[in-house]
Length: 148
Image (cartoon, rainbow, N blue to C red):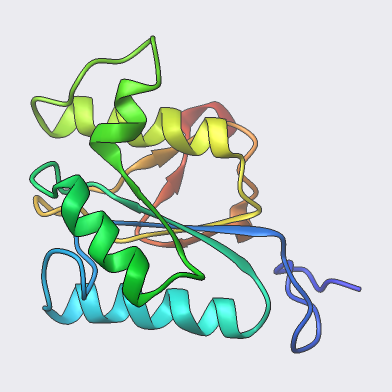
């Protein structure tokens, strides 16, 4: 049984958890946010959750993703640039607003139970799709304006 935050007893899965981050250790950077994102993903996986990581840094190459997957085969890593290529309604992000919209579209398609979002470099949060439960929004994200 889940509590009001969607968390069950240890080892009980919430379903799919999405971590949206600009950086993650072992892929593109090794700063504090990257280390935190990797640590969170590994911890959630160890608890039995399905973890999906979206890296929003558009300079990351597919070769970097391959290396990361070799080091962490149990984590699903996705690059925003690859996700945008598979979405006919968006184009490559060219500024913070278009990048935020691409993240919004990705989360809407993935429909995870919980989303953890790190703040973008300019300090403004991403918006999440309508229907994202308030307790399913951790970190620096806000639920979309449709829910206000």
